[in-house]
Length: 496
Image 1 (cartoon, rainbow, N blue to C red):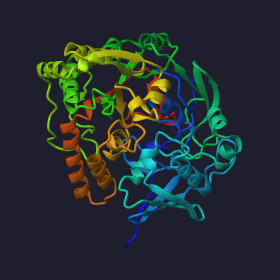
Image 2 (image 1 turned 90 degrees about the vertical axis):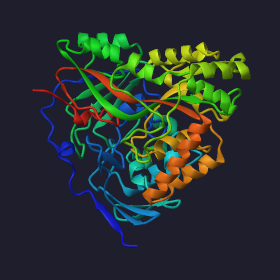
Image 3 (image 1 turned 60 degrees about the vertical axis):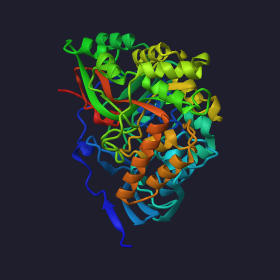
C-alpha cells in the first residue's frame, strides 16, 4: 500500500493571525461549574469550555470546521491500521517541561485504558496501540480500519506524563497543567475557575490577561450580568431571551447551527420500556415540530435520526417519526405502562421549557412522568450507572461528537458496550461495528442506513432537533461562534 501523507505545513490564517494588543480580562458566565478539568474525564460543555483553553489536542479544527495541525504537525496513513503522527518539537507545558512524543503516547494509553474509566472511551477504543517510533514521532495502531480516527483525535488532549504519574488523577484534576494558550490559576468550587494567559504559548497568544468562568445556573441572572457589565460572554440562551437582548445597546446575540442533536433517551432495559410498543407510544406522544416552532423558534430543525446533514452517515430520506398522541394513549392504556412512575432526568444546562413540554406530552397520553433535576455532574453519573437497568427511565440530552461523523454519536449512545447506552441489540451492534471499521464509504453508508431502520423500528431513542447555539456578548467582543461550540479564548478579541 502506498503511504498517503496529509501535510500540515500551512495553518489557516485564522489560527496564526497575530493577536491584537492585550486588553482587559474577560468574564464568561456558564450554566454550571465544570464537573472536571481533566480532559480525559469528561466532555460535557461546561467542562470543555474551560479545559480546552488549558490543553492542546493532537489535532484541531479551524473556524470553518477543517481538521488542522496542533500537537501533531502532520500525519501519514501507513496502512488501514497504522497512522504516524509527527509531533511538534517547540511546545512546552505550563511547568516549563517540553512536550514530547512520550506525552502523546501516555495520553492515548490513558484515555483508552478501560480501568481509567473515561466516559470518552467508546470514541477511542478502536485504538489498540500507541508507541514512540522515532524522534518526535508516534505510531497509532487501530483494531482494523478506523475511518474516523483523525476526526476523533480532534478531541484528544495531550497531558504531561510526568505530572499525572507524580500527583495522580485526583490531584491533576484539581491543578491541571497543559500546554494551551491559558494556564490554570484557581478553582473556587461552585463559584468560578480562573485562567491566566500563557505568555510562552507556541501558537496564538490569548488577547486577555485573565479569564474567569463563573457558574450562573439561572439564565435571567446571566443576562442581568451581561447587561450590567459583570459578564462579557454568556452561554446557553434560549430564543426568548435572545429576542429580548437583540437590538439592545451595548450587547449582541451571537448564533451558530451546531452538529448537536437533542434527544429523549429511553432506557430500553427497564420495564415498561423493554416493550417496543411502549417505546413507540413515548415517541408518538411528542410533538417535535411544536417544540421547534412553538418553543425554540431559533432556527432549529426537527431530526428523525441521531445525525445532522453535517455528519457523514446521515441517511437521506430516513423514515419520519410519527406524531400520534391518540395511538400513544391507546397503547399506554392497553399495556398499563402508565402504572409505573418514572423519572425524566435533566440538568439546569438544558432548556427546561422543552423538558417540561415533553413531560406534559407524555403525561397527557397516560404516562406517569416526574422531572428529576440535578446538577450536571450528578446527571452524568446517573446516565452512566454501572448497571443499565439503573440508568434513568427517560432523559433529555444534546449530543455532539465534534467529529462530523455518525460514529461519534450513534456508537456511544446505542452500542451495547458503551457506558452511555441503554440498548442491547446484537444486530445493531454489528452494523455500528461494520460502519466504524471500514474505509469504504459505500459500506459505511449502507450500514448506517440499516442501523437507522433498526433504531426507528424499535424506537430505541427519540431524536428531537438539530440544536442552534445562542450566546450573549458585550458588543466589544469580536468572536464568531462555530458548529463545534468551542470557546477558544485565543480566537476572540476586543473590537477596535
